[in-house]
Image 1 (cartoon, one colour):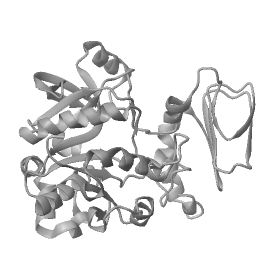
Image 2 (image 1 turned 45 degrees about the horizontal axis):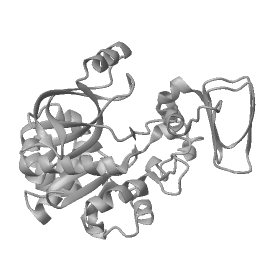
Image 3 (image 1 turned 60 degrees about the vertical axis):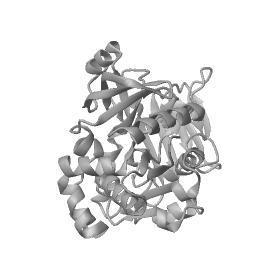
Image 4 (image 1 turned 180 degrees about the horizontal axis):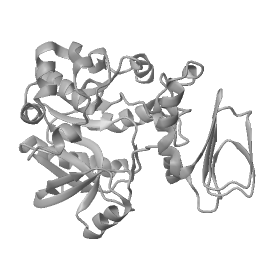
Length: 354
């Protein structure tokens, strides 16, 4: 690294599309989804600690509802490094508040990286090499650097970044000015993007100096940064709910991208389990006691080792059994779990299931 990097883990998400395993007090980032022993949040911290000179330089921003859970998951995290949002207002507010705190404590040149708590990364050595390159660019340039994942298929579930002019190489990795951001495209558009070789998936990981991003927030998102500067985090419930992509990255002229390959998944819904764990010689992904007849291409998950899931004649479905809930859905409709949760939320008989 060119200078000390402060890493901020964004851990306020709900992970609703992993319901019923993910619930209000046990969100996705607290879960172990890859068959290992560490939760997604813990694995993210493990990955960043060697790159940030230890716990003193690692921060987490999360919601008041799950702050105690974060403390239990990461007991070594210094208390001042845990920022607790009174109400989730998406990533723009989180980035603004954390960057302001960094500036107060360490100055405008504090080098900051923001990382979602719930991503999976396969090649941690390449990830470290990439982060070093991004840090070099951000430390020496007025730049907001994002990591773009080289696409492996025409996904309609990810945002895309189009690379523009090449500005140089850092740590032997090429860097480009961002031409544009595009939200989740349709299938044909995604295929066209891949055919050009100019597009990356938007990873949601960013590296910049505190002063650079705060200046850009003042220009492009004053409705977020100015109230926080004036009133502090108490103003959170009154802030607009905007992602950092929408509030800033789609507008700034200081966005740069490093197209990278280190094996990545944002674990957006249950289908991610298949991408991570499916073996070529197995008909299904089974994390349960499953007895199946003519069942193919399915994901079967149960938290109780004594439960048995029996299926007959099913194809391309997700079956999840957790405590008092069983979810059965077609794999191509798992995005609609959020709609079911709204229905449950509106009925007092079911709110305890959330």
